Image (cartoon, rainbow, N blue to C red):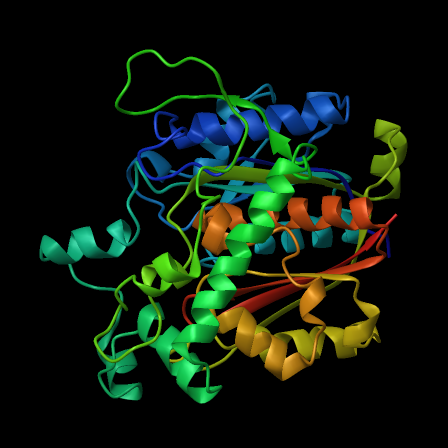
Length: 392
């Protein structure tokens, strides 16, 4: 069986809701990532055999197969297909898995995997809430409600349940959030994001003409303080999780180009990393966000590696209790976790976050001379993807 290699990985800088990227149609935003991947590898566009894009809110401007629409807005020929997938927050990480499986099987040689999410233009929960408001039904069936005691799945409750289970106090969550901002601020000031960020024009919804280029993540609070974070009201009256210890709403797109040995020869490029192991697992959909913990253990077992063999970790900061519980369960070295900050500071553009984190992980491994990197993501419905890559 062939190997799967990542030969390019990039992302847009995160845009706040209503911010620097809010004026971009998501198909055009995704197309810009596709074009940049083709340009960075000097790839003949006709060599790209498929485009697999993650997107969570597939409605409105992100409906009707956003992957294919991004292709049609890009430099790729009309003959290039595209498919959109929804594994919730892990959608583009799963896109990477599907792309890797395609080139490893030999059925394809060059595939682009990525994701896009404009949370400004297609608000979170719109695909389920809008039809429900119009009397068109809801995604939870009678059988689901019967099986789970009439509990409506909610990530906010799941975050609180994890905090309670692992004995995480509000102060710990607040401090974790502060460190996320501080690490992200330091990375930005030191230019550690420059190689992974695709420079793109400012385009705000509220402006008819925009000038300049979007180069830095808008969510980073360079003046973050523990006092300010601690003062933010918790999401539930008796809870410990607040908006300050949760991921930021974000507009963005990201992508990777994945090839096998034949693809390397066709492109004449050197790989950045090899996909070493891919795992996906599901668990309790009520607690929902805990699955990265057992999924990581499963991935390490399948890879024949220990947690200490991994040089860097990217664990999505959907809510601070998730990476903190993950650290306790795995015994991982905290100094190797989210070394350039995470979604609390940098934003979480849902369907784009998987390959966004992968772009950050690959470039961080190169900057620090590491070998193995592990990425995992909690996902709605109680799922998690884990990807282990080896820097080359």
